[in-house]
Length: 412
Image: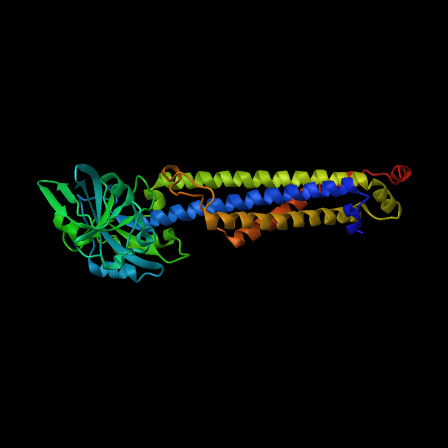
């Protein structure tokens, strides 16, 4: 009987058309919702991944100082580093040292941030963002895990400003009590598109920076801790603090253990704003789809008013009649959700495969709209959408209860 309410016959074109319009409305709403979630997750994954690649999932630094501090060294002995590495959920502990300087090549000069990394440094992030071509010339991509002491890796923006390429040997000047000059060979060029964060970044062996700063082998600007996949960085902070913070005899804390959202609030505030916009879009789309389905269901009800009167005269209850119409409406909704899923996933795949929609990396940190498909989220969205729309569809129930059998049958 529910199937007969669908106005699916050739002779019932208005009802068929309205059912189609309602289904298309649901499909469009689902497409917008799935695309919004996937793009938001894509931005979140890209930016969090880049920040983690630059500063780790957890950072340990001197209180009141920046991660790039080169004045007050963070002193951590090897036994403590070993204890941190053995913590559950910690995949790597990277000691780094920074110093600001100036790089000169030919007549061009640019300010730089020299970052020294130790042998435990995870190069996978930089390796994945190495520039493959400079001025049309294909570059050899080296294994940075074996970076020698006289080699450096520089950002693409710095290379572009100074006209540098792999194999060049620019001069580096560091100004302190005296001017120290160093000259290294460029091993590779990376492009992480972190703009203000990495535009002057130069990576090298940590011993080079320690030599310039006259630091010892257990002195660092900061520590970068990487966590295992699926582990929340904040859940490991207290365990790291227990190892690093000296509490003997006093509560004096000589270091801070922080996560990237605290260190780079402007980036994560932007992500939070994006998530809020997505939440607003999801709410609006569910409401729009729901009320479009209400209008479609009401039209079906008006077209079948004589049938409703007949069913009532035969003794069928209002709730049972409403159930029949609700089943038909939910069938339309289910088809719309299925169609929306297929269309959305096709569009997302095309964006992942061909990067059809570009972006300005200066403003968005990526050169195309990033997409991350989370099938569990999509399934949850489908179920929630179905439940919300089903709840909204109970509104037309009052119409059925107001139908009088005698009057509706006389209209037949």
